Image: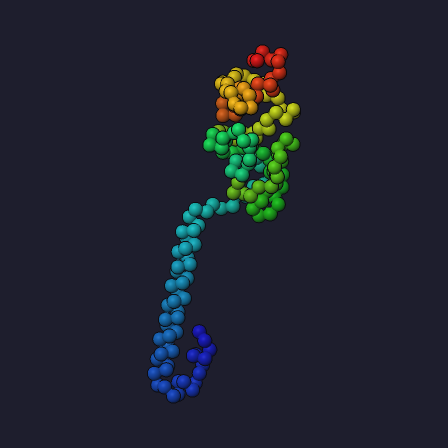
Length: 185
């Protein structure tokens, strides 16, 4: 409340209704403050309904990483892609909401993740798949079956399914990757 209205004795002496007006004004001001506080608490209650408490992860815990920001090769459709990858170990806590993970050497993205992208790994979980680095020379996946073939303007391609991997991880490879001596060609 402005000090001029609360402590001005000249107004109170010259106008007999001034004290009543100031008391009424103070009451309305207190009512407005109370309404603002109630509104603030109500908004906070509704906003916090969708929030989760921050996960307290320890160094060495196994976590899954959300596939939300992971970019994969262009021939893999995000619609049929895995939702989480991992499990990976927590290497260190960078700050209150960011963790550094121990990722394999063949993964080419940063190892710091916000806590909202991490999910604690449960050993009975159906989630958790390795991020595949296709055809990097180090990881050779054994071919289980060729599911389809197609002809594009770049040449013929085979849809390959690998042993130990789900059908979702099948990928299209050009025929010349197999070489002329391969039994598939």
